Length: 246
Image 1 (tube, rainbow, N blue to C red):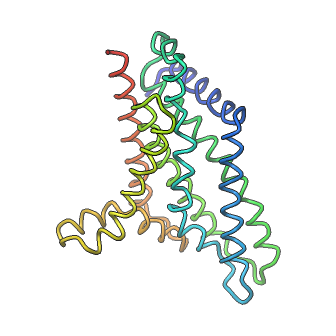
Image 2: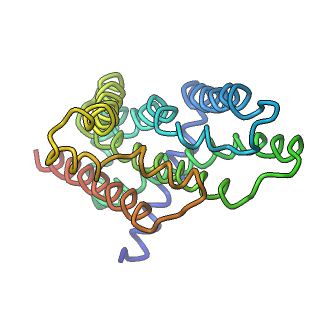
């Protein structure tokens, strides 16, 4: 466990990153883009006369909706520090590599939660226009899945941000890696040999999201997202440690 001082340092960094997201245009743009995408999908696939009152179409496609969003959030976390030279101050500060990494990640996670909160009015609209009202359980499970997915994608983006001072390269690298992951575990799995297909099936993100969208919370699926998220955050911490040594 972190000592109290490390927890305080982590929270200070996290809050600074969270507030900084709303001081730059990209922070508001990303938030508006994501809520807008949800709104378009909501009108097209949820507010359909005679259709079941459910947000399942949104949750089932969450991975593809989050694909450009998470890299846009995470691209500046460390890359901006490297580009402006402010990383040198952080590198010489009495802050542990893991505290620094966790602070950056938690700041992005807070922004993610704020972004998801912006979609909650759509739930209110669905409740108001549906008769009978939709079951709350699948909606809560769906939001849990989007949160876990977003955290995993942010962790991948954080690692990309640690590897380059260019925000553009960080964004493209993270999005390309996530796109390859999604395509390999969907389209690629169908064409791969059985031995490889089994591995790809175990790494498939979309398969695990479908269970949440139905209101089923599998502890194995939750562990899948949490373990991989922790792995990428740890890898980011190692990348930062290597930069300090160089």
